[in-house]
Image (cartoon, rainbow, N blue to C red; front, side):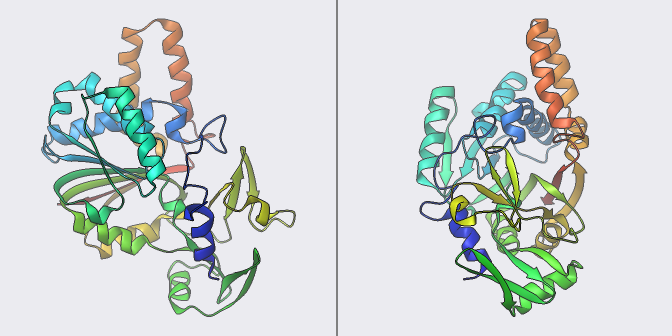
Length: 329
């Protein structure tokens, strides 16, 4: 089978890794910015308020997270909007795009427990189901979870009993590899369709996403498996793919140049690509920490400060992760 089909089954099949609830953070397989500190969502909340103040996002606009997993990220955003500009909770519409019923149910229950009747949450299984005039879309670590094809010196990989054979001809994959100057590595499948769906969903929007990678493609394979905070290169000779299949996360570095081109082709304007630490500081994370310092006991402030530092420290999430931003207007 094609590697993209194999990866789809690994992650999204009936018994796939993302098909059921998984812990993230210390007790899970990996950390994310969301699991590290509430101030990740808080900084996005501050940015959303600035979009309203600037007139880009209407007070009755839609705030939509794509692929929310637990729902913690959007809940953190809402919690900080309540703290900073509570009246917006009466007018903004909150949406999660989540394909899996079990995760939708977990998110609904978490929002009920957290907010009761104060916040109304709407679910859709895909972007194509949502129609709105004005929105802010946000996603954390979504582009690295798109299925990909594996390419090596003109040939595309196929999977035979968990082994990879590079003996297929695929002109589309080859053309993308040549465009991004790769003689080997991962070629993501689905960015173009995703960008078109988002563009067709909403008349005016901003989309912000965080992921690891670079604008220029890596010169080699980055595909790897995360299991209990261990990173195993996919082509490691000792890897037991049959045992890891659907029981661990599989991912690769994002080529942001490919994401940018997909959105440009869909008529959506590329705004910027920044290191996560720069983006969060520019959007006001330090201002939020100052507000916290003025309103809580010192020991609580120090605890939250240490967590927030992990978001912006170059040797943790701050430099390797990037923020990419687009607008349609």
